[in-house]
Image 1 (cartoon, rainbow, N blue to C red):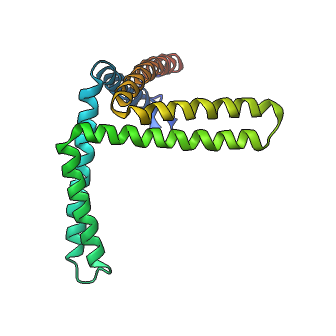
Image 2 (image 1 turned 90 degrees about the vertical axis):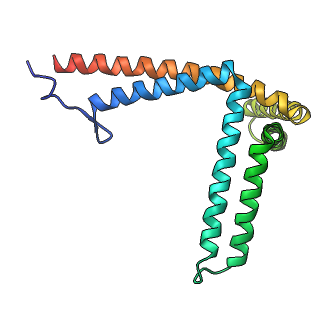
Image 3 (image 1 turned 180 degrees about the vertical axis):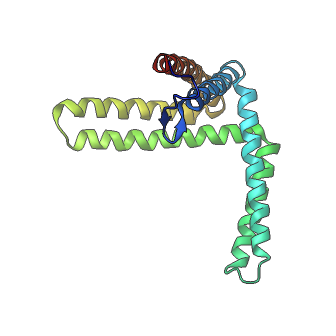
Length: 190
């Protein structure tokens, strides 16, 4: 009978023992994010908006530093980009409701464009069987986009809750997958 240290199955360059443990960790993190988003969508979105604002401020500072380099071409444009990033980052952190509404607005616009493109593709061609699905997808995306654009702040909270539920499901599946992999490794080593 081989000991656990003698049986090393490599998956993607990592020993299997590490892979199942990583899958458990990813499952726990995903589950935690899902719970946070589902039960506290507004707070979770505020945290995400603050992180995005901080990233923009740091990016702006990086651009300012690049603009100080005498060998850098287009120093003025880099400095302007840095200034805009810092200002947008500060506004995003200072006005979280506005930031959430902007995120909702962007999601809604993307869904409207996606819906119109799908509708055009479905109406203009393709086989009869696929046209129905493409047109249905286009209509659903278009209606969802219009709803989200109409009330972006409320829609973002609802979308965060739905995303949280999805993360809970995915986290639980990752956890089960990690335990299944662990069980398979034990069987292989026995």
